[in-house]
Image (cartoon, rainbow, N blue to C red; front, side, top):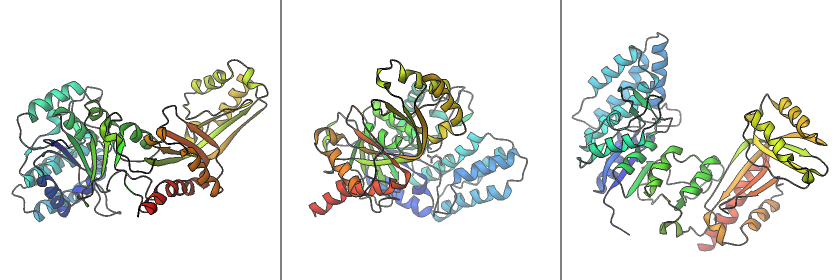
Length: 451
Ligand code: ASP
């Protein structure tokens, strides 16, 4: 492996939720010289019923905008930062910065400003604790007047600033427009900041530290002890994320992908675990397989199917177009369109037609005069994703045999031309069991064979 000189390390909210987590972060950062630029989130939840600082800040801003007193709710935020500073015996006292934020909130600060202070204050604490220079993200992440990220300007500002520094802490989640107004990314946006920094300084790796040991093959709420994926390509990750796996902020992929910088998802609470490497599909690293054939399984509930039947449908030129024009006219996007000789179905999210079902049906009826037309509810889509499928025969057979053994009825099958995924439509009630069965066939059985 090449020597790694420069790593960007981004830590999520749970990795910096209290002083003890800060200690773990310091150990990780100082364990490798290459970890020179650190991007923190705001303190997250310390336990499942805790509240994230970002959410507390949004609440304060809302209260202030309604003219309510925020001394108590801001007091809780203040207490969390002070507790971290005190427990770590920091030489830096955040009181003045906290006072300033409090005053600004009372004086009608914007939502974005309020939310951004979680990262800002945490960055101040972390820079003091690590002895790294603090770089305010408002000085290096630039947005236009419409709140859209200005990539070129951001790269230039970051390169100018960070090029001169050995080590720095750059808070995640926010930047500013040309007039200095603070603007945030959407929720989870510290991932994007990490990615931007990685690209600006041409990092060798972007390490994204969180509270799981990587991207898991399946949702752990469905498959207990699901194993992590060791290497995944950007394309596969996109497929899995689209189908509901929550890993990284969507906009965090593009900046590093364009610069060919791998992302390594790591666990702050298990730093020795290698985590998941997210790599380009044409890189040598993408040839490393787990030995499971598939890379991951994800899926979502909440779809419905518009089923259309008409004799001689396949001979009627323009039939599909007419049906799809109805959806276009109503601004409805669909997911899949499996068809037979005299039938076609359109699978789409329930909420896309909720409350408009009658209109959709009557417009389709008018457009193509079908023999039968119905909407079927309660459909799930499950995606089995894996770059290994292209070169392995029998993958589909194994998937469908597993479902057949479990007496699960398959309502739709769709394999993309890239052979990167197989999408299966099922009834909602079969969804979890289907995920478990497919996981067992590809992963559990392989692990048992190997041991
Ligand atoms: N603190 C922000 C949020 O909760 C951003 C982040 O954590 O990435 O969404």
